[in-house]
Amino acid sequence: MPTVRRSSSTSWDTDDALVAVPADRPADPRLIDRFGRVATDLRVSLTDRCSLRCSYCMPPEGLDWLPTDDVLVDDEVVRLIALAVERLGVDEVRFTGGEPLLRRGLEEIVAATNQLRTWRGEAPKTAVTTNGLGLARRARALAAAGLRRVNVSIDTLDPRRFARITHRDRLPDVLAGLRAAESAGLTPIKLNAVLLRGVNDDEAVPLTRFALAHGYELRFIEQMPLDPQGAWSRTGMVTAAEILRRLGAELTLIPADPATRGAAPAETWLVADGGRRGRVGIVASVTRPFCGDCDRARLTADGQVRNCLFAGGETDLRGLLRAGASDEQIAQAWRGDMWAKRPGHGIDDPSFLQPARPMSAIGG
Ligand code: SAM
Ligand code: SF4
Picture 1 (cartoon, protein in one colour):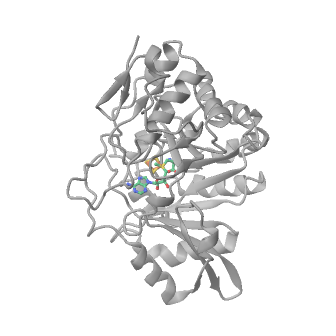
Picture 2: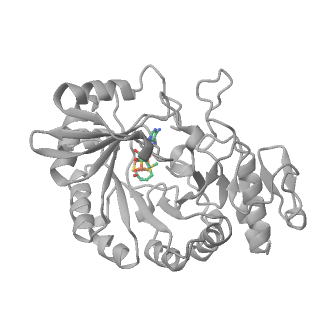
């Protein structure tokens, strides 16, 4: 019988799983933690592989990919999503990776997720975070499977820079993917952009204008220490304050109502450029952390749950699943993992250690 690994210090076997939840945890079926947070937004990584090599995420030669046998098969992924939705109170499911469009069974997994019902009796909200390669071919089928929305990552509008950042000359494919997502109704489309100093930090305004022109909502993401090369530095990172300065120099910005932010990681501004109006966001995980409002849970492609991108440990649900554990045993192990969530990511702590898994192997 495999053991369940959790935060390096706790382990139990499947027979113990029902009693292994910490004694101080209230009998609440949801994914609660000690600090009053409830995880309702599940990020599901479907692969650690990718069709691009964004310099801040992966080295050009790629990484040591997960062994195929370790990666959950479609039925296993769907079983874990089902118990998250039906037993643990999850009402939003985002598929990510690596690159989720590399997963052949994505449409089937989306369709099965769409059949589930949350405690409110509704289908969970679904979205895919993608680099857009291959979206032109699959947007229609994904929409037909019940997918609601896509987040597409695009760091530059310049084809040469795109090739420099991603090591692939594929900007036209991303743009074609965006058009296809729009015509398939996978809206509102959100764009993600990471600005890198001296590479694309002059594109804050052009990217925002592009988003406004197409009715997309752009979110800049502060670069986080999750690169396998360990090259991240606080001084090298382009901060939210710097992005706001650049935007404010050319565009009209008004802070959007903070009361409507909820657990959303992005702080948003209403933005106007001549006659064009829209909204732009900044996910300032490093300089303006939002850990106190976090509502996210994460499932990796190899069936480990993590209560935070920066968690020091994870819980092995794949081992339980393959050992024949019941849904309730697996749910209990997941509840126990979430109960151990730390109050914050601790990037500013002198003791901070970058997680062993890079972003692409956790799911961004
Ligand atoms: N491949 C898909 C994509 O790029 O959208 C999904 C996975 S990717 C890890 C999800 C998001 O994480 C992307 O928007 C990417 O730019 C962002 N990302 C990757 N590494 C990051 C890092 N070190 N800091 C901040 N964001 C990062
Ligand atoms: Fe791939 Fe996304 Fe990482 Fe870029 S950010 S290398 S597209 S996983």
